[in-house]
Image (cartoon, rainbow over all chains, first blue to last red; front, side, top):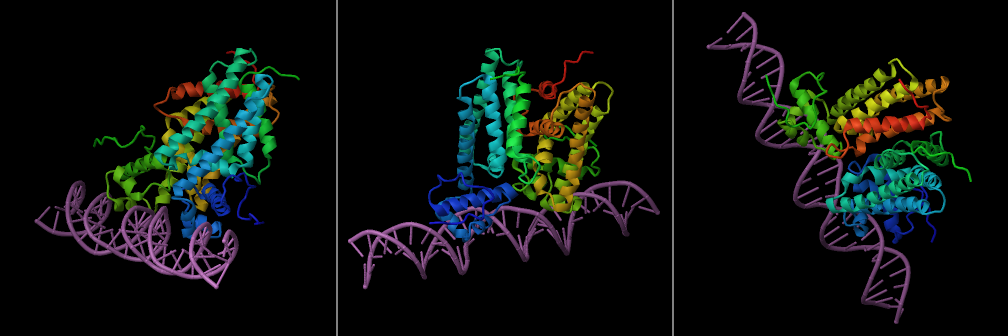
Length: 210
Length: 210
DNA sequence: ACAACCCCTAAGCGCTTGCTCAGGTTCGGG
DNA sequence: CCCGAACCTGAGCAAGCGCTTAGGGGTTGT
């Protein structure tokens, strides 16, 4: 009933992965993919980290690529959920943009192992799976663009190029997964706060007071 | 005397790679690494793109990793040179910061094939080669931090967290290599211009007029 | 007690990988 | 006309890859 999850560097947002053995494999794969990259990771390595033999992997997943697909889908859905939750709150556009950036960045910093796989191993997916994931990404882009657009409409923001700025904001947030280091000087909260402030400046937001 | 370089998607900043056959191999490797990633690229693929047999690669390079190292070193040096050139100009800190971002971003967009390899295949390098490259990166970071610091000192910028903002600026520029597409809507010049403006806002620069 | 079930492993198949090596071709200088 | 250096190829080796197959052991319901 109780199994220590000592192999993983993160806590578990993988509760939905139901056979416990399948979850152990998936967590092991996230760690391995994040460390070495998808192509440099062997199925033997994944199975080894999960404390199983190489063959055990193929009882729960059809191929190595299916593992990546599962990770990528769940990861993108989580990240998108974080974004949308903040976007749908009440408040000024500045509040919502700051909240979205803060949460999205914090997610990428806290879950930087997962995020690295999710954001940088996209090309390793097969054709169909990749287009599926790209669709999820477009939704993230739409969320950010919507908030900025509303801010401009309400006169809160001054943005000459809304799609371009939305792209830059998202790019800035996503790249956190690349450089963030858990043993570094900044906590996820600090980075989120810093970035929220920077983004408000990028959109020319007037200082907002409650 | 005249050999069409039909295999490469870019023009050639690789003039310094001296035996012509070695250059052809290097250019082929850049294309292949950028398309599929280092680990997913085979030595046969590289040699094939350069119009040679697999064995020919090992006359000019000791290993596949040495190829990546050469690409990474030259690429980083070029990018750093672009940054430093703009940083050392005369003018206000805002002028220099905008110029640096504009050029650096343009470089990453125009040479996005090279830049992708240079920025995202770092972990594939061996221990020694990687630390060598990391040193080059720290210099890029120092350049940006210096400009921002001077702007703050001169009262041009309003930046609460100079190292953090420098990190964000560099991160923003580098990530261009990931998403930029030559067949996309924006030209490298447009992206550079857009980003220069965004960065000036991030540092709270007052509008500067000539 | 025992069959049915799930979960796992040992062994290994067929293929591709990075890389090697003996030998062939081309070409300028004597 | 020949020599030697520079450059390249065909063939292939040892190792490692993703994945398969046959079968074993523990738990469960009856």
